[in-house]
Length: 357
Image (cartoon, rainbow, N blue to C red; front, top):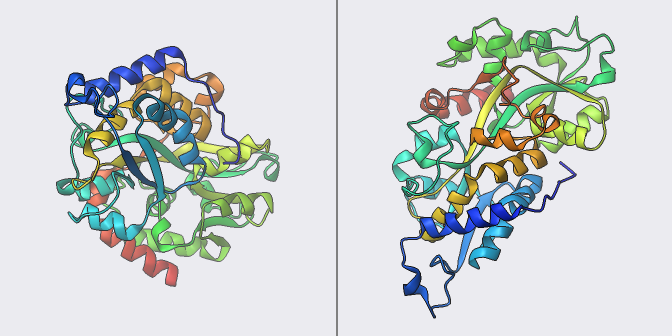
């Protein structure tokens, strides 16, 4: 995404932030007098690990900047290292206070993740059995997108359409690195006629067969920004991938169609490793992330859906139209993160093998 909308927070948001910070603190404000700490008993820093880019910038605008002004706690962002994240998620020590992961990873490593403090707001769009262990939720739509002019008579809508190169001619942009399998198997199953409520456990043999049918017409990308390049250069007629990439092109003024029919909704979250060095600070920041007005601001900047359903009340219709889990999108398909977590290693092994041919 190239353009970020920076919205000045209303006064009420500042008041809410102060309440959120003080409500999360286990220290008496009197204890911090003269200590150099903020009124909420906070000081120091937070090391935040995500994947950088426009999403990280949007987090500063919606969450970090005001939190730092209110508390004096600096949020230091680092591009997430798999080695550090994996060490901490398996119980080891590291520098990260918050790690950006898929919800299936939270299920997989729940034993080594710190639960949110009792006073921290929960993202109620998450399943009840995991919402204590994740915050900062944003919903990504794994969708198909194309330049509207590519199909003047109307383009593909379902995943069966995406795989139908006779009816909708042209190359298909597809995930080309092992770790970026996203919803590849779910897409293949839906294209094969599997009902949304029968997708799990994933059938790797079926997925392999279906992907092999399309493989001669695939153009692989190995980083998400390449999605935009494939579309604008017309190297691919249609691309499968995260909705935010197509949203970025719309933000640049291009006429892009995103099909929400059978869009696969995947929750991305932040999680706190049990060995986080700055536990008090990150719990306070986690509470700020639950504020619906701030989630709406983040959604408007990124096109990603909120974890707190109240955020939709602060969005205009134009913003909602680009949000995958908007109430108006009734034909979306939700990933089953808990079941996926049980197939996580097998899923990566399968896709790595399939890519290798």
